[in-house]
Image (cartoon, rainbow, N blue to C red; front, side, top):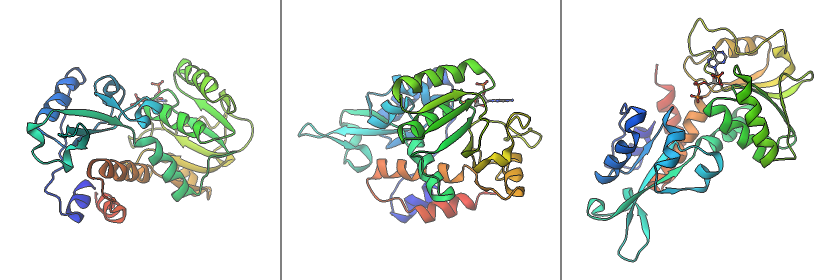
Length: 275
Ligand code: ATR
């Protein structure tokens, strides 16, 4: 996906994947900064840890409490900071790491474009409210004005803690822990249940029938069709997998690093070409 964007803009950049132990994340970020890297993406379990490890937090990372994108910035002679990717001689200059979050906006963009789902006034059943992805999703949907949020988590205490936080930060949103009795506009799976072929549904169908969800979004994108999405499709519901969210968080990260428009369609094609 990023190489498609790099090629499109004819940049002399490379996007690499590195395994880093969480205990050594601080060193990894420092090392990349010192070597004049342009930026980083972070995935679990680094997104929460990185909040404390960057020099500056963008408003997006502050608001959602997680960093999935770092942009290195180089000090300019006039005292301003320029993205390292746009700066000449960046390794000679003092530089810093700025943390961003592009997951939250990517989720709502994917929900709008793929499910025609608009948060204001809507009702959402969120599965996996205790995980990192579920937390960001719930906070973003609350900030965007959903009417009611129903939070489910295997470890219920984590869902309760998140419900308390949402009630404090977004008091107009009706937040409950547990399955709703009525229909919802969106059922959102943020659990890791469905990653493996033998996984059951992430939903307790004795408590909530899938048919009561108007639309279904599964953040999982591999496999392309989880058991949840297969069931939603069978019952004729509008549904989508997490590929759109993956695409849009990457597109926004590319724009943060390069200050150029992301070629979204080329990036989408690159993602879709992955077997
Ligand atoms: P993160 O999103 O922070 O990486 P995770 O460990 O991958 O977290 O788990 C994501 C979510 O999937 C969590 O809500 C987790 O529930 P717990 O908070 O109880 O751990 C949920 N989850 C993982 N395995 C599950 C399972 N077998 N059944 C139900 N929920 C599960």
